[in-house]
Every structure is written in structure tokens, then in C-alpha cells.
Image (cartoon, rainbow, N blue to C red; front, side):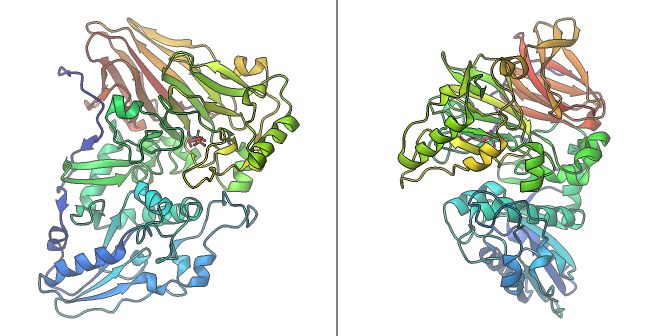
Length: 577
Ligand SMILES: O=P(O)(O)OC[C@H]1O[C@](O)(CO)[C@@H](O)[C@@H]1O
């Protein structure tokens, strides 16, 4: 194996496309169209995108080639009444926080899908907007804006991007975005994926980057069989810290680095291209949709379909505050009330901690729910601080310790921590009890859906059982010369386990593993660098704090340390039933 040098955390992991390369500009995209015949060109994509700007630019590019354009904006054909009915009903209509996941489709927006007129000569009928791909067209393009842009635009009330599906000109809401637009638009995109002729990334609207559909699918087919890293980013929250800015080089938009999206599959993207000037960000989800068995493995995909079930993210509270005290929905509540097939079990692995830092986890033996509820309501009512430690246990945040957080367990990371969350994928269901009386600049608190929280609070596991069940000690399950694999945490009610591969370091020392037909996720939690080398000969460098997916199809692999230092590699996998 070739020698690797340690390198810093890579903010933009990028993979070469298979087949044709990434082009930039509308001119390059339209140059690939068949010039000799009239065309109906459909450009589909998510609701939160500057469609008017894209249509203008694309029209100009076509006209400059001497092609007359007539525009059909499918958003003008959406029915208002139908748009109202996209949201699922189920949770009480006035639940201000959550909605069950919508099971509607983009097609439900139309009384009848419009029929584009066939142009003549060199003419192009340009059909744009979410649902354009349902129209009869000669060519199908998909224009995308990664979800973080939609969330920022909706949260910041900025038009024209910050809208909801079905309401193209009005300010959108996050509730509608998360629980209706995203599931509906994602299903639509996934259904189109096998026949998209060009993927267009509109992160830089003045210079769209695009990749031919065949090259996109060939690239995804390759990546589904070899180790791959998604593009990480951090958001900012009232509790965010500064570790990711100081140590990893992130530049947060709003002052702090809080939740680090290492691998949150529904929002994650894979960068494909030669360099930052010519790259497209493809949804990681497309790997699951197009290659579920290669990526997830046969058994896991039979169980979870095309949903990638595990999530790795950071909670950075170094120099920040404590997370809200919250819990997550229990399995049946998640299914019945929120319409998700599996729930938000979590674990916290402490990557780094300041002296004295704590994790809040589990009820005290003497906690009384009625008193806890009274204090939660008083905090909301008159701003009296809740005595959190009278109800919830605190544990020292020791580096390398894993805390298990099955659904229903009250928890929070305290200030002064870098927590690697190794969790089930759902991530939008923080049922908050208490948020430390924090207010934003406008004097508003974050949502406190405490009725949902109490409905899900596990009051049975408390006192000593919390330490016994949820703060487990490592158990070695495999070892070799200079390395061992430990189970850090597993519980019967959780469908995944968290392991750690410890490599002592030194010349020639490496660990070996095998996906055995189920994907692994690896994170270098300690050490300067590692190289993952698969049996097929693919190698992937992993620097400190980076997260890597090893697809099921990768099979056997080795982990080599870079340099002589010992390594800790956190590994998660779905456990066999
Ligand atoms: O509600 P808070 O304080 O922002 O907590 C962050 C939330 O983000 C997560 O880390 C991921 O969804 C949850 O564990 C937690 O509920």
C-alpha cells in the first residue's frame, strides 16, 4: 500500500465522475442537446429553488443558440385546494410543532398534469418546476439546491427560495418543509433518478454545475461499492460552540458551530467533480435508491427499504451552552403519531470534553413526573428556572465513553463537550422539556413540545439501571496483533450497535474487518489518520474526526494507521435480527 501523510480534516471530500465530466454554465448544458429537432425539455427539482432565475438563464442560453423558447411553468397549474391537502392529517391540526410525514405525491398538486405543446423547427418548449418530469418530454433535467439552502431560506423568510411546495410565492414554514415538502419531493426525485438526463447543481445560480445522467448513475454505481464520505457542514444554534471552527476549519454562518452534519442521510450530499469550480453535490440518498443492496446490504435493505438507517453527527458545545433537556419518541408513538417506520434512538460518544463537563442522562431514582411537569410548566409560565438535576442524572463526560439513549430517555449534552452522535437516522423529533430559559433576539423561546415529551418519557428505567444499561463498559469481541475491536454499546431495543476498533500503532500494525453484507460507518475519534483499504483495492484516507461509509458490497477491508500513533475508530452497524 502506498504511504499516506497525515492531513487535516477535509471540508470538501470529492470524487471523480465516471464517464463525462462536470460542466459549468447553462451554455455547456444546452450545448449537449440535440440541435436538429424540436424539443420538449422538462426541468424538475425541489420547491425551494429560484425557478424564475433558472428559467431566465436557461432561456437566454437556448436563444443564444438560435432556439426559440416557449415556457411552461408547471407551478401555474397547481391547484390551491390540492396544495392544502398535501399535508398529512393525524397529529391534532393545531399541533404547532410536528406533522405526520406526508404520503402525498407531487402529482397530487395537479387536477391534470399539463400537456406541453410540441414546438417546431429548432424550438424548445421549456417545462419547469416541481412536477415538470410528470409531463411528456423529450429530455429530463433535474435542478437541485441542497436542503441546507432551503432550510436557511425558509427559516430566514427569504424569497423566492424560502417557499413551500404548492405555495410558490409565499413565505414557507419549517414544519411544512420538514414533514411535507421534503418527503414528497424526495420520493418524486427518487422516482425520476433512473431517467434523469442531466443533474444540475444550482448552489451558484450564476454558474450552474451539471453532470450527464448516465455519468451520474455510473458514478453512483461505483461509489455504492467503495468507501465514501459525504460533504460535512455545521449549523448554528443557541447552544453551539467553537470546536469545529477552531479545530476543523468550519466557518459557521451564524457565529457558532453546533450540530455537525457528518452523515445525516436525508440531507447529505456527495461531491463529484474535479475541483471546487466544477463539482456537483449529489444526494447521498440516491446511492440508497439506485443501489440499496450494494450500499446497505441485502438484509438491511429488506428491513429498511431505501432508507439509510444510521446517522453520525457532532454536537459541539465547547465554549457554548447545554442542549435542551429532551427525549425522543418511543417506537409506537413515532409510528402512530408521526408516521415514521422507525424511531430516533441515539447514542453519545464523547470525542472531547473540558474538565468537569457533563452529560445529562436518565431519571434519578427519586424523580417524580408530576413535580417535573409542574417545573416545566412554571418555567414556561413565569420563567422560573427548572431544577434539572433534581430529576435527571448527570454523568462525567469522559473522553471515549459511550452513552446509550434509547427513545424516551431524558438527556442533553452539557456545555464543554464534543459529542459524536451515533444514532438512528430520524433527527427532527426533539421533544423538549426545558431549554434553560433561553430566548432569541426577539424574546422568543425555541419550541417546547413538552406534552409530546411527557407522553414519551420512559419512567421505568431510572436510578442505578441508568448506569447499568446506558453507560456500558467496552467488551472486546475480536483482536489481533496490536489491535482489538470492542462493543461500546448495544441494547435489545436498539437496532444498531456501536463498536470501537483500537489500533495500538507502530510499523505494519493494522486491523482487518469485513462488512459481511451490512454497511459499516467509521469515524476516526482519536489519532491523526487512517487508511481504509478494501479487498478490491480501493483506499480511502480518514483524518481525525472524519466519518466514512463502507458499503456492504465493499466486503473485507483493512484499517492502517497513518504514522505510529494509536487510533480509535468508532464503528456502527445495524445488528442482525
Ligand atoms: O433541541 P436541541 O437542544 O437543539 O438539541 C439538539 C437535537 O439535535 C439532535 O442532536 C439531532 O436531531 C438531537 O439529539 C437533539 O434533539
